Length: 511
Image (cartoon, rainbow, N blue to C red):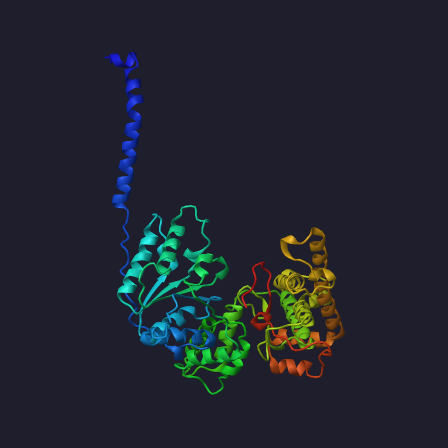
């Protein structure tokens, strides 16, 4: 049987007319089914954090930031006293600085000390796939906070939503940021509501957020100095039974450059090491092991050949020898050829004090210490390995900064314009100056090691036998060797980064 309309093109005409309608119907059905069975996320109920046991006494090493925030606490406690003088509470406070410096703890301490309700949100939680949800969540958060004033709104990782506008293709982040700007701009009654935000990337924030009237105060929370580190260690170890040999002041000196989060981790790791020994107290050896664990990484079980162990021993001996002989490099505290993490060995230098200014000669001395491992390999074995990759990268960074940022090059071009405005000829001259500075450090390392080869051999052989050398061992070997004349140099401090590590992989070792 044959249908007549097939022969005269009826079916094809029908298909041509109805196919788009059928396709659109199926598409609408598919979208409906997708939305029908998609897991729905209800907006989380916003409640203030009721348990905030963190007060000023629980925060150490951030005294400047605490002083700035105490005024906010006083205002929230007694706003009438400030209003009588025409003073207003800051609309917004931006805490910025490296990760782990205690920005979140400071915000919680403000809420605890003032008795205000504390609403904490991550900026990333405002951003969703569907446009408009982020702005709605901002409005809801501020509305709830105003209804429960006095209140503190804490927005963590502000850069997730507060970056420069115009870079978001979907427009959802920009719309969310615009709503945040409106809420902070005073168009609505905010009562006694303070917004505290934290960010690690101040330079990426939109300028509209940073102007007065929004985030009125911008507080830099820096890593603590040596006195601050000691107080932080006391805070995090006060609930731990410490042995009599624990010296927190010495530990604070060993941890230059570390943040409060790092120090808390060290205290916790020390307690774990003590628990593994079934001990009743935490000893200084546990803190030393914890510092090595945090700075250099977990002890590795990799097995090195005898030749590789000799190369690593001489490499670290070269670092230690140059570090001891250079007048402005911190004294060596410990040398190890025990593989940890990605490092096959490390040399830990102990600063006497925190310093923030360094001369040209001090930076060259430090580069000499960094290149001591490569120089020792070349002098002893007549060959070089990839174990100095991290050392070379750090030397390149220091030399580049000396020429391009600090105007410490060898020629007059160091004082000329920098960056994209510099001519190609100027950049070429500066690159030559960078290489000259690095070469100067390497020549100094070669000369030092060549002149003190017996001491280098003794350090390396002792390392091969004991794997770890402490300060007393270094004094025994190098006690009679004078340091270079400090006629043009002072003491320098490069922080915990002075712990140099050799490793075969291109990935830098953790310090």
